[in-house]
Structures are given as C-alpha cells and as structure tokens.
Length: 206
Image (tube, rainbow, N blue to C red):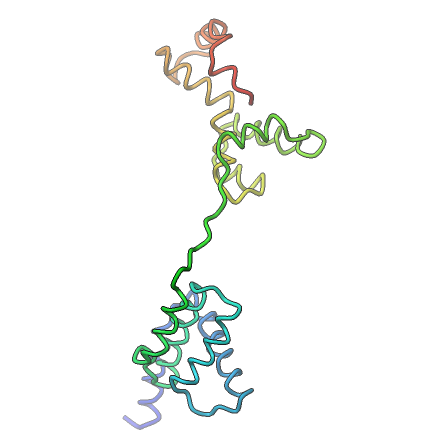
C-alpha cells in the first residue's frame, strides 16, 4: 500500500471516531482554537498553550461548559494532530480547580399550588385564551406533550396541572371510586355525577 493510500485510510478511520450527530460542533470548537492560535502566532500546540486558552475561556464560561469544550478539543487534537491531551495534567488540574464549589442551576418547576393560583388569579384579559384552550385540550384527552407545545411551556408541571384538573380526569377518578369503570354507559355515569354534586373532587376549579 502506497503512503498516500495509507494516509487516506487512517484519515477515514480517525474521522469515524467523531460522533456523527455532533461532528459539526466538534469541528467548530477545533476551528475556534486554531483561529485563537493564529491570532497569537502560535505554531506549536502544547500544555502551556492550552492552559492559556482555557484560562481565557474560564472568564466567561461555566465549569460544565469548560469541561465540554475540553472534551471536544481533546478528541479533535488527537484526531487532527495526534496530540494526547489527557496527559496534560496541569490542564486537567486547572479545570478541576475551576469546578470546585460549582453548583449547576436547577430548572425552575411550578408547583401544583402555583398552577392553581395562575388558573384562579391570572388576569383573563391577558391569559383567558391560553387558560380556556388548555382546559379544553385537557378535557379532550390531549397528552402532556401536546399541552406543552400549545402553551409554550418548558416544564411538564403546568400541563400536568391542566390534566389533573380536567373534567374528564375527575370523572374517571370518581367513576373508579364508585366502581363504575371507564367502560360503563354514559347514562349510568351521569346519574352518579348528579349524586356527587358536592364531592370535593368536583369543587376543584378547572
């Protein structure tokens, strides 16, 4: 096998190391590093160069993001330049030091009480369409994903609140309690609903 054929074969194998779905992200991270080196006229890549690179990044990026960039750059330098960054112990020690005391932010999730408060107290002039249409969707048996997309909510808690408070859900719960079962006739279920006019499960606002 000729040298150029061997080089092409090796390149093909090494390229296969990169995750297909995130390949562009890896390459973009590598390009950012190469441009950074060019701007500073750095021709050789060593541990000191990477230390300065990540020290600058640490001024604006969180610890978790630094580690993500480190992981991608480590893979790309291994593929592109045959550099084993995992042996740069000063660099890994620096990143670990930056992780000390770091606490990832937790996504804010609404409680059921907060959802009920929104349904009861949010001004109808601003939120009536959302509240009404979400309630109708929940009553029709819409899934949590459908409700989340409809309301533009990132958290599933809001959608779950609509489903929990929907008339259809309350009916199913009441039927189960009184042994009707979901498959019973509408006439029989209606008779029991009249008897439950003052039941707590029907007093919850929709």
